[in-house]
Picture (tube, rainbow, N blue to C red):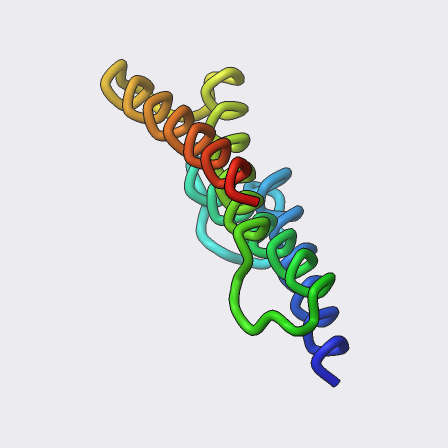
Length: 121
């Protein structure tokens, strides 16, 4: 039963994450939600949902574990950092220099944190 519940979580979070990460404007228009502007926060929520999906998949590989594993944390951090970097490279992240610098610092720190977590696995 737990495996079916995890599968339902993966399907729900994964599909919502893909829709929000790839097309926040189309998703909000299709669902009748308010306009998302540049879509930064919608895409970040999508990246978070995709990271949680990967964490659930890793947790499903080890059924005896009842908490999030380091592999799951690594996935969440890498999805977040990857989304931030892609938005910065595409120029869709922030309008100010200070915001861009802050986002680069956050993305680099998430990547370094993931590397440290990988070293403990």
